[in-house]
Image 1 (cartoon, rainbow, N blue to C red):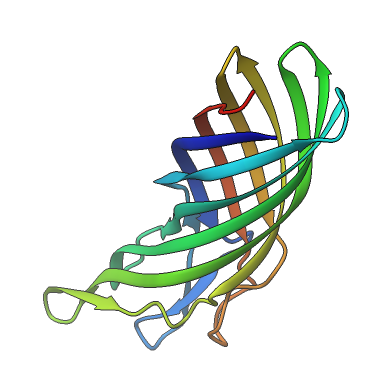
Image 2 (cartoon, rainbow, N blue to C red):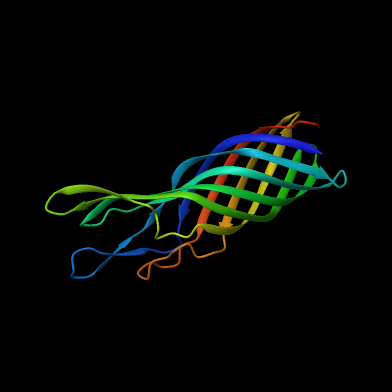
Length: 188
């Protein structure tokens, strides 16, 4: 059994499509999602079933979200999600310290916030609870890691499976997260 406390960065966005914004009463405007940067920290444990195969599970704090393009009446729109993620992965140790991994990850957003500026005869700042986005997500993480003795560098891509949009005028929104972390292997 190996324990790996880890720390890293996320590059995340929510959405494959566009969000429709009804701002001027004349027509819909499209807001395209953009990537934002966040942090990831937590611990994972890996049970080595053989020299080639391991099963890992962990608990990670992950700051995820997205930003959107500016439109005529609204700008600086962003969504921040503070999540607890629980990844369960099969690790295929190919050669040396190189491993490929794939699995499933459950995530829960315990804090959500939307913020934006709206032109109401002048730009005003607004902030909401993020109620337009779901709390629970299920994703498929795939990745690669390399162990430099006791230091593990891990690169993953999490593909969200559930629609996080909770407003009628939104296209389906799925999380997309690139994650790069560095951990220290204990018990190896």
